[in-house]
Image 1 (cartoon, rainbow, N blue to C red):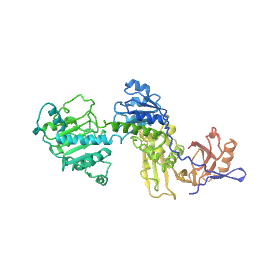
Image 2 (image 1 turned 180 degrees about the horizontal axis):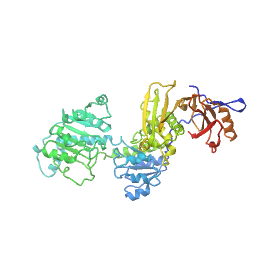
Image 3 (image 1 turned 60 degrees about the vertical axis):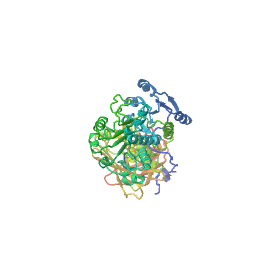
Image 4 (image 1 turned 90 degrees about the horizontal axis):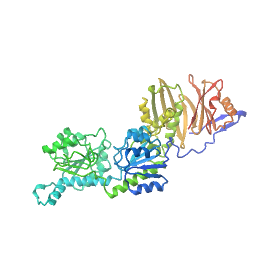
Length: 560
């Protein structure tokens, strides 16, 4: 596509846009400066070293009281915790400069992710560091239950030689059900397959074809329960998984079934499982995590068929080093604008870091800025936003485009700040209806994004595309800009009647204010719709609203 952004000036000469090189790193704005990172739990020294080697100041204060954390976090840009610190909404709200929270481990249930997201704070974890340690601990639990290793050890240390009491069973030929087929679940499958176990599993995010590739037959949850001799759980504790294994599930399981939980306390209904053990239906439990830690109720723990450890799944020398390094390296990646593989609450942030998506995200935000100034002001209660994507941009990119468009549309209405983390949440809280749609082809010859905004029943569509990493404005409603207008720097937006020819007069009027003009463009004329004029200038103009002609009205000044 040719980039045309020319217009007549005084004397009949043409102003040709030089098309200054567009910044390669351009993306929806988000401050990634980390001047100070607060660490409130003990952590391997490598974490601190990596941060300091990358010129990030570290305030290492493990085991602070809540009141001390509230004070220490006031000027912190980042926070790193393990399982010892509970990051509440109160803490998040007290940290006015906070940009990122890192959990040196997998589970983030000790972090109020809702509060963090609302405040535009990225939450990340270290999903890879604990994987092997947790998987090995799971396997140790399975073997220990099958052969009564802890019970036999305790009996012998008590001076007894009771071989017949601890008659075990082979794992060969038994069926292991794995609920949660992420990193840990897959590593467990690989190891227990070497024992000759049949591995079946369930994960709503994994397809049967994918699970088959690592030797696990995929089933629905209801189909899994009655098939398994051993069931191991590797899911997060969320409302959908709380008490996932309850009395009704236990009733579906075969007699003698044994469970393993090294994931999170609360996934198994502890009271229901105790009753099943007492009744002789469940055959055993290997448990490393509890609803309350440290536990106060030891009824389940002291049951003779229970093998238990005090949350040791990640307690290996290797895991402690790995999670410390993994979380620190992600903080460095955050500063450098690289994708964060452990991002928990910011899927659009990672998508925006992809080279091919950066200009599209910038485009969507620019379209949002234009849309916020076109038409009536509208009320948040009667606002809907739809992003239409035409042509192939990249896979699964619509949510990023929508998020970026919301930033542009709402940034002036959110004084506390809006970014790629909190834009969808703030829009939903304001009652804004959002949607995304995709189609193979649109009205333009190249891939394009159309932002449709309906305010109090009045609909407007702003369309644009990308050429050579440069975002372009294609049209406002049905009025098109020939060749597309590069969106960068600042722009003065004017409108007039459909058949008006005011571009030359506008350029003259702008020149009176000693404003340098990068380019000046006019849209096509459409009967019944305004004609639009876009004048690009290098910097913001203080008195832009004073530039008016009798037949052309100043609409707004937009900085891209």
